[in-house]
Image 1 (spheres, rainbow, N blue to C red):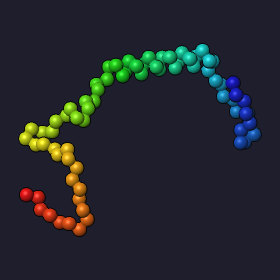
Image 2 (image 1 turned 60 degrees about the horizontal axis):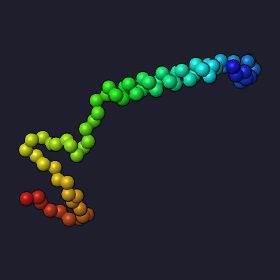
Image 3 (image 1 turned 135 degrees about the vertical axis):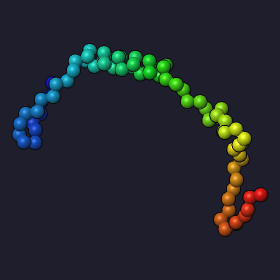
Image 4 (image 1 turned 180 degrees about the vertical axis):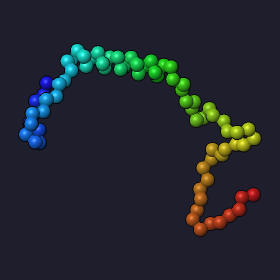
Length: 73
């Protein structure tokens, strides 16, 4: 329990849970988190995902220079 004086002069009391209760809550939370991770659907790596059929994305970077206007052939 924490006691303090409030801004208006009244007593403020904050009840804190016991250490055992906090430990149990943390343990339960960790178990639920692990369970969610195990049952979740994993996002595939970007390298493994292909684009739509008939298109290919370039993996070579192209340097664009300021002031140079060109047409793609």
